[in-house]
Length: 100
Image 1: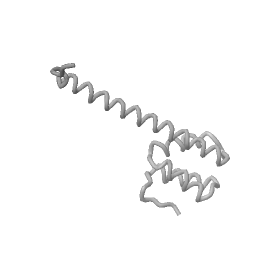
Image 2 (image 1 turned 180 degrees about the horizontal axis):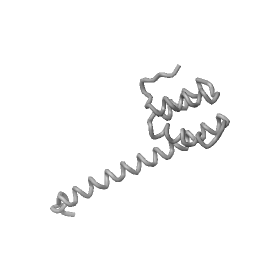
Image 3 (image 1 turned 135 degrees about the vertical axis):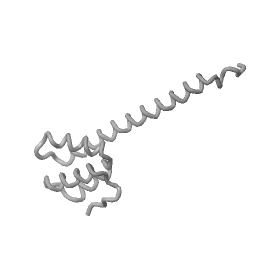
Image 4 (image 1 turned 135 degrees about the horizontal axis):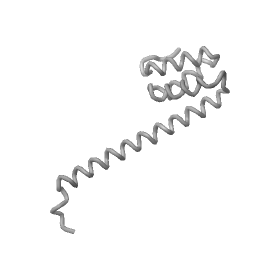
């Protein structure tokens, strides 16, 4: 049975959709354990909406692609945050009096 404690509402919907489409509970749990946010589960639900019934391997492949995209987005946001902090330090003049 699905552990609902760490699942977003769309992740729970994804689980139910997979089970209703005839995929096993174990497979649906594996997918939703990895796609446990509204963003990632929503992406998978959008993908599944375009097909009647995909092989499990294609769903797993799409899951990996979604997770890869998510990581790239998170990395980009972190880099932007670091860059903004660096620019704030420079604007504040913290490095102005450092001798080389």
